[in-house]
Structures are given as C-alpha cells and as structure tokens.
Length: 180
Image (cartoon, rainbow, N blue to C red; front, side, top):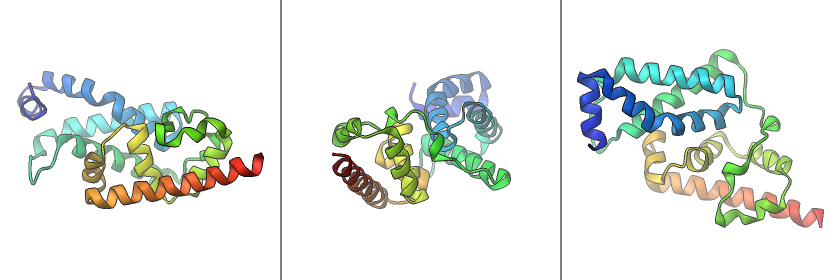
C-alpha cells in the first residue's frame, strides 16, 4: 500500500493512522529534537504534532504535487515555531550534547573538531540555514522534501544548504588551522 492509499484509508478508518504514525514518528521526533535539543519538550511537541495531524487529516488534499510528508513536516514546523513564539525560550546551541547526526562524508573534518566548535559554528548560521541543515541531517530528508516543507524551490533549498555548508566548512577549517 503506497502513502497516498494509506492516507486516504486513514481518513476513513483511524486504525490506519497508526501506520502513518509509525512511518513518521522517528523522523518528526528527530526533526523536533534538533530544533529544541530537549527530550521532554520534544516528546510534548511530537505528540502535539500528531494530534494536529489526526484532527486535520480530513482536510489534507493531494494538490499540485504536494506530499503528505511535506504537510506533516509543515505542521511540526508550525508547532515548534508556536512553542518558541509563546515560550520566548530559544534553543541554546551551547547545550547541544550530540552532534553525531551532522556527520557526512563531505564533512569528514568534523571528526577533528571539538563538538563545542560545531555548536558555535551552527549558532552563527541564519535560522533558515540551521533549519535546512537540521531537516537534511537531523530528519534525513531529501532536498525536494525540504523544499515542500519550506515552501521554496528545490534550487533555493539546495543553494541555502550549500551556503550553510560552505559557511560551516570555512568556520571549522579556520578553527582546525588555528588549533594546530
């Protein structure tokens, strides 16, 4: 059963929602965690996200190449944004303890850099850049999926991502050279 059929069945019979929940729980949880860096808050916001998805599932429509994945991530993004808007409590990147999600072949040099340096470098990125990096590495999303979540073109998301990676690479290389 493909995603489209599953979503349509879940609209009529909520037992199929459990399958959607299982498909997306880990990705949504990871995405929210890397926006909050707090497990209890992440659990609350993930629950809130899925409650909103369940309540508004009947309103979801397949239009203009839209995907359920992008729709659910937009809900998660809005839940996190609302949390920060009302709590006035922002992620303190200084408190990040796990940056292993950030590693990839093109950024091997991160193994040589102290995690505190990575935190400082991430903090220097724009909020859009931080979010694209988190969606790419934290939620393991493809560029076209991120584009749908961010309501941007694939080209714009790729450019934002590569500018972020270039900035991070420059900051980290500078730090590595200064520490040698």
